[in-house]
Image (cartoon, rainbow, N blue to C red):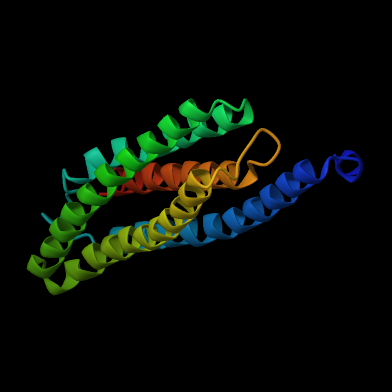
Length: 195
């Protein structure tokens, strides 16, 4: 693959370099998130108090659908821009923004409910609810970074900067949001399994 990259067109070379950088960045984030989830699991097992069960706020469920809509919209947008289907590209970005609205709205309510649960818990339970809130907030911080990336891609799309040769920023944005989807699903599953 490296040998082929030397003979690629400049736009393909940039895509290859950007993807390599993104994958290295995501590998670092995987280590951070999975270490934190392992820590949560250990703390949860150690601090298990009878009747102290972390109940996930139901507001997080629409957010999951919103995240999937963001990823789906960006996946659609990447394929559309690659084929120079401008209208489909714009529709994909619009679907991603609609998903972002749903996700952020549900996150606000979900985080508020999680924080209320944290304040109502006893001293020993605080570790568990506080850790869960920390993990959700850590994910939210990365979502804000993803929102910045989505804003940048959208502004560049409005300017008409993307075509079938130059679309690597859209591809990278989609990859990042796919990653955030997987992390969120794994986090929710961990919260649900490790009770």
